[in-house]
Image 1 (cartoon, rainbow, N blue to C red):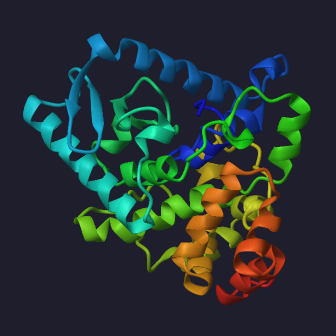
Image 2 (image 1 turned 90 degrees about the vertical axis):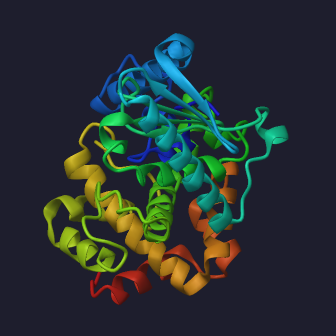
Image 3 (image 1 turned 180 degrees about the vertical axis):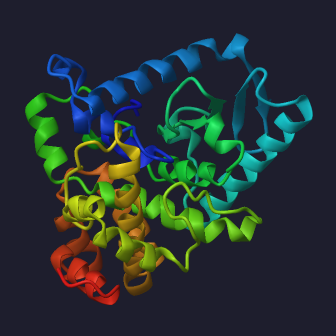
Length: 314
């Protein structure tokens, strides 16, 4: 997929690929806003990282992945250890989700991971993952988050995974797009798998562990910043400032999304929510239609029950 197609919203450790479409196509850059600036910067940086990797990075191939590490970030021994860690996280995510990387469908033998400070926020494509070195070296569990996005991003040609749509088609798909599903599910899986791999949670937005998500969601809803993004959690669309204002917009949005996903998995099952993610981002239906079809219950009802379960009346 193109790095800034909608599914990369599905694809940041903070999220981004599909964000490129969600905040505006390349043709729409005439009317700039901070999110568009951030998306374009990431797109440009990612292309440069891939282009210069043969000379600017060390390449390490493991059984399941290829890892490029910008020169000077790690010692030779640390590079090998990091690559093996990426391999373990990729395999763990694949096993947990029961989804494999299909070389025929993806048209490449193995996914490539780039550890760099030159591509902005961590984010994923259908065959490549860009890991922000400043964040990921001290907190490697972020790579699990991005691996989830990659594994569930099966069809690069799906409209939500492309960046060449007309502004009208892009706006229509964005209006019915479940950004909370992408980031909430990747966060949920990360916090489930990290302890199994003897890793600390990434704690970018959820500051505790998988047992504190509900309380942190309640705290954010009482905060004006959380209240502003709550309408987008368990609904559709993307809040303004998602890329440009991580502390005040992305932080509450990720926590609320992860809390809602935890509730959905507990009551609908992991297999159903994995299917929901995969089919929603590979399709064109509104998220409300997809969740009704797959779980047999409407999104509004699910959302109401979740808020009641965490002690919030909305």
